[in-house]
Image (spheres, one colour):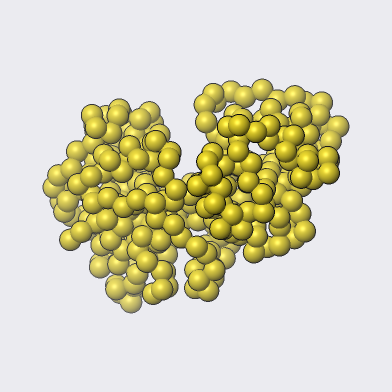
Length: 327
């Protein structure tokens, strides 16, 4: 099969290789997916740059979508022919979805409706599940004001839609007018330009000085400082799923204590089984109903995997970046 891989950390142009390797066969409990699309996420880029390799050869990308064409022992042959999307394909495993085929545990290949494109399916594993778990952790948000950092990002775009459908008012941070338009099309009521505006001051202006009920955050390195400035109302909560460097971030304890602020962090790769199952069930229902907008910002053939990774690294594309896997 054709595949893209790297054997050492570094810049995409320096370490990524596209070539041929044996097509894998599914082991017991596994399925083989003939991939049509592979999702490229910021975590895939960060892993290639710095995460210690889990094997001599790493095929990046955890997200993908395609058709099951073979099953291992213990998996019903009725799964052959199913259109599926994948999650955690390259989490603590060397072989992800940057290839014509991937084998993985049967549970990690999720049935997708006929109406969902393979491109959109390849956006569900990390963006879709991260968004849904963040909103689930926020609890009942109807009538609440929620600040979504990076509301136009791949994850933030889904969060904005889910919150709006749950009856919340979304205030989103964005980096440009085009990104503001993208977030507003998903349901954001207000967009704040974090590069040029005082976000906390604008939040207070929009909330009559109270602060928002919830912050759903993609960059704790920036948002941590806002907590002491009153971005959250008393008894508010921050849900965080990521951060830019630095890894060590200071917090002002007293404002958090005196305002009874709640902090929740989660890693989408490492959800508890009950949370994973709840997310998968709820996301499947949303997809079956066509309840979500999907935006593909760029699609590249597998041979241009370097360009795909560089595009994600640049962070300027509106929408998800995917690889087209031709056969």
